[in-house]
Every structure is written in C-alpha cells, then in structure tokens.
Amino acid sequence: MRVSILTATGAWGGAEVHALNLAEVLKNRRHEVTIVELGHFVYDDHVGHSRGIQVIHVGLPKSLEKLTFGESFKLLKGLISDVVVFEKGELDTANWRFDAAARICSKRYISIEQLICAVMPPRVSRSHLGGFLPGFGLWWYRTFWNRYARSLGPHSIVCVSEAVRSRLVNDYDFSPQKTITIHNGIHTSKFRPDPELRAAARRTWGIPNEDMVLGAVGRLAPVKAYDFAIAAFKELKSRIRDRSLWLVLVGDGPSRTELEGLVKENGLQDSVKFPGSTERPWEIYPGFDVFVMPSLLEGLPHALLEAMASECVPIATAVGGIPEIIANPSMGWLVSDRDQEGFLSAMKQAVGCPSEQLVEMGRRARERVISHFDAKGLFDRLADLIEFGIVNRGGSVTDGRMFKAIGERH
Image 1 (cartoon, rainbow, N blue to C red):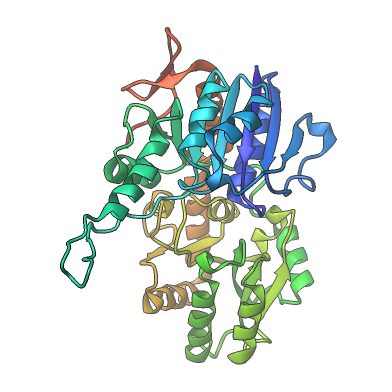
Image 2: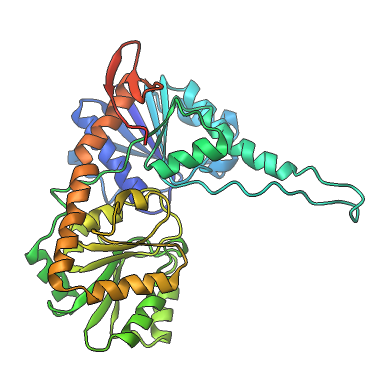
C-alpha cells in the first residue's frame, strides 16, 4: 500500500515527530511510505536514507489556505497514493477544497488534528450606515462553515486528545462517528531517567549536580509563553534565597531574542540558560528536576510526555489535552493558563518538596506515560485505522468485516 503523509508546518515539533514515528511503523508493516512537505523543508536533518522513508518537497503556487480545488487536485494527483494522511498543525491548515481533492485522489483520506481548535466566538453583528441597517453576522457563519467543512472531506479524523475531539464535535458539529481520539505516544525505552545523562547535561550547562533545575524543551514562540515562566522564575528567586535555582530553556524560535532580552532586563543572566535546539532530547530531560510548560495552546504535547517518561516532575497549564496526561496531583501540578500566581505557587511547592517526595512524583509520572502513552500500542491503533477503514459508532475499525477496536470514547 502506498501512503503519503502530508506535513505543512515550518519548524520541527510534535507534529513532525508524530509523522515520522507513524511513517516508521507503516514502513515496518511493509508499506511504501512518503513524507510530503508542503512548502517547507524541515525533515532533511531528521530522516536518514537507512530508514527507507522517502521525503519529497512540494512547492506551492500560493499559501496552502488559498489553493483552489484545481490546484490542490493537480498537486495531490501526482502523489499516486492509496492513502493520504494529513498531519495538521491546526484545524485551519489548508481548506475544504484541499480536503475534497485529497479524498478524490486517494482511496482513503485521514486527517490528524494535533492542536485544539479555537472556541467559536459569540454570534454578534455590527450595524451599518450609522446604525440604520442591522448586520446579519455573516462573518460568524463564514467562520463556522469554514471549520465545519473540514469535517466533510476526510474518511476519518484522528484527534490526539479527547479535548481536541470534544471541541470539534461540540463546537463545530463534526461527526462523532468518524472522529476518534488516538493519543500521541512516545518511546518510553528511549525517554527514561539516566544518572549518566543527567550528569553530562549539567556539565554541558555548567550547573552543579546538586542544584535544582527547572527546564523546558520546545519551540521558543509566543504560544509557549516562556516569558510567563521567566517572570515567575524571577519572583521565585526573590522568595527562595537559600537554594541554587536554574531555569534552562532548550530550543530555538522566533521569541528567542525577546526572551534573552527579558532575562537580561531582569538580571537573570546567571541563572537562566538558552542551550539552543537539540536533535537528541532524550539526553536533555534527565538533567531537569522539574519540567515547566506554561503553554497557551496545546493538543497533547510530546515534550510533556517525554519529560514525564524521564521522571521530570511537571508543572503545566491545563490547556488542551494536558489534563489527560497529568491525571492527578500525585504526579505534578496543573495550573490555569495565564495564572502567574498559580504557576509561581506550583514552582514554590516543587522547590520545597523533600527530595524523596519529588523522586516519588517523578516515578508516578513515568508510570502514567508507560501505562497510557507508550508509542507502540498507540501507533499500532493508528496504523490499523490507515490499513483497515473507517471508525464505526463503537469506535472500532471496519472494511466490511469487524476488526479490533482502535480507540475508546472517553
């Protein structure tokens, strides 16, 4: 079977990791797999020839969201695919005309929704001609239709968290029968605690092994709200003076210069580090004691799963599918988004925890990931869906016969 996995984001992140892991699973099942980059080049440094996965780059005549049906059809028809899988960074990526072309050009078309969609805004209308004519709120209907229409093209819509699925079904009338949750998963044998990697990471950063490190791994972009973490860390340092505390932000992105300026402005140069991006994150997480994720928007973040599998104790905002990962307070802290005092309070509690308690929380965090988010079972479910058909009312896969269930309705 020939499978094309489409990607359209401009930087390496969770959706790209997910696409690569899926490609490897399908390749191991003896399918011919191609990763198709639409208008961007991010996979060259991550896919070796030995993996047997082809990567092709497709230039776009205009932005993906503005493609006509004809342009989309011409682009997708050239792929000659049995199955097209679209790894979407967000619901609004591309348009309904692209979805229609993908469905026509393949035997099966599946979209994967990685981020929770925005809430539908209230239906209000403006008046015209100085209030003489009332408006009809056509913008609201246009916004709703453009998002609802994304449910029509795919045979199946895979959501990486139940929060993502619930938003699509409840706010945008996506069909519950073809919308299914299959969580992101990670390789827990790769992401694990390791004393030697911990020591090596801290040597690289110039941080003593006994100091407390709060850290993050991710794209330095506004949606990740690392400015929020820096502000909370400054306050934490001012309140706790009897411990050596560090904040390590691993990654790169458009906000890096701004964040470095914020650190300098607040006099934190000696305790906040920016090591840059890494292609070997499993060597980084063991260097952290606490993992911080102050994000404003997430689906089901790989970085949080990777950190918890490495026994880092998480502090994260309760957005998207994050509450589905941090299931109870015994393994970490959930904080409302933009709640700086709450985030600071969680940081203080983490720093004040006896070392034995923090170790136990990290152990529970890893157990949670192993039991619910291990890559093998989750990607096998997704591969089953790609091979066998659509999701029926019971959340199982069928192509005229009954195959095993691939997902649970929560």
